Length: 300
Image (cartoon, rainbow, N blue to C red; front, side):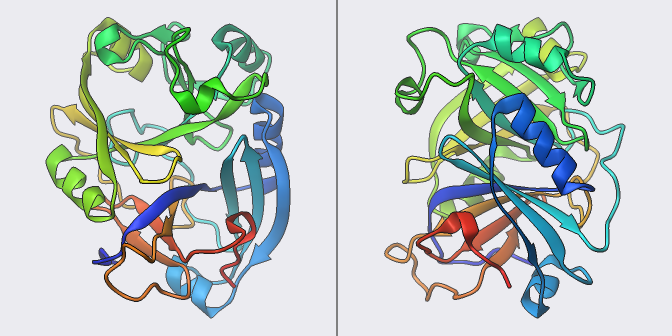
């Protein structure tokens, strides 16, 4: 699968994870972060098998937190488990950041469960102002998917979070992906209609503890779609990353970002069926045709 030219996206519509047990993982997200289960069904058929490059279908569970949607796929033909030795700077590494209104309470809730494992060392880390001044904690869910809890400084939260409810966890702020070349990946995502919204160079002891790495230096490039939705962050670590990022869709490490296509800004006819493409480092992107209910959009 290669890049589909001349198609612009409107918004990041949902996040997708492959799982070995959709019900178990859904229960974890419900209990730990307040996700709500909105649908459970089965996806299958020739188009699904061809697009996902698998035999058979998959059980699907859809969850929502705030305005953001999470899709869990449990394939009939399971692939590889998440690599135990994958680190924060590997190309395979991709996480999404869950915004919390109270980091202490959210972290305490995690501590009362044994189903996750830490990536960060020493608990939540407050980054310096040059790195955004946020407080963050990285960890893995029961399947090994990386996640991040994110708390903004008082009075300095983006406007979309200031009007949120009083729930402990408010929604998903962004998906962060490791890339081998910031400029190359930036050009790719700009060709889809995203635009650079922030940049920083993160390093120092706080970043090392957050990433669980010895002495990281990471170039962060945030790219936002035109719609008021979660954004994408490119993480380019120095020195170079050696582990390749391409995995099969039924491997647990496969993570998908589903973008809704903007027909008014696309230069070619919008496809009727959902399509999958790969970014330069093998991260999987789904192109969704405009739909009235993307939460329940069916691929078969």
